[in-house]
Length: 188
Image (cartoon, rainbow, N blue to C red; front, side, top):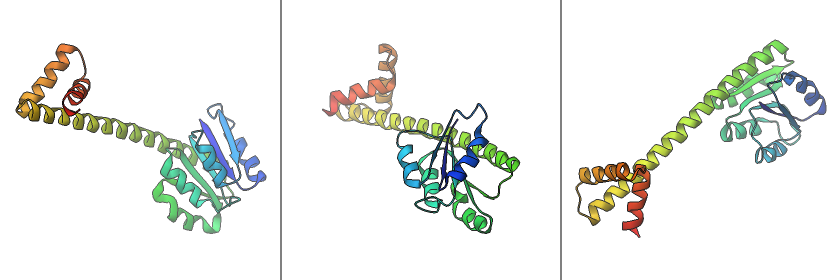
């Protein structure tokens, strides 16, 4: 798993990096600001994002919310104890875990396991969402092809549906490919 540590200080980064010494963490990258982190995320994908507040350019809340909205990474924020509840109320709905300083290793690893589990769940939902979008796109394409057959060949809806299925079987093509061919033929 790839880890991005965003910490405003070298001391914070140096203290957090050893927590990811396990072989399952194959890349730990550290930056000091939200802007640097966002720039890195354009080229790399991270599994875990750890934000040790405050950052060089902002507190860290905006960066955490940005990553929660734009990635499936597990996100943890480390904040001062006196503001932990306030920050947590702002970011909890986005699935961001907030830990208060100082952190015990056992609490950190427990939060890390929860973060990893949440990330896995998000990735599953993302795959399911992509599959559903593909299915909807295919249904729209088939509907367009049926409409073209109904308009130009005066077929009924069931006859157009049967025609597409039969062509797919006879030509050993997918219904999508047959629909695309029909659309190219009649809508151009």
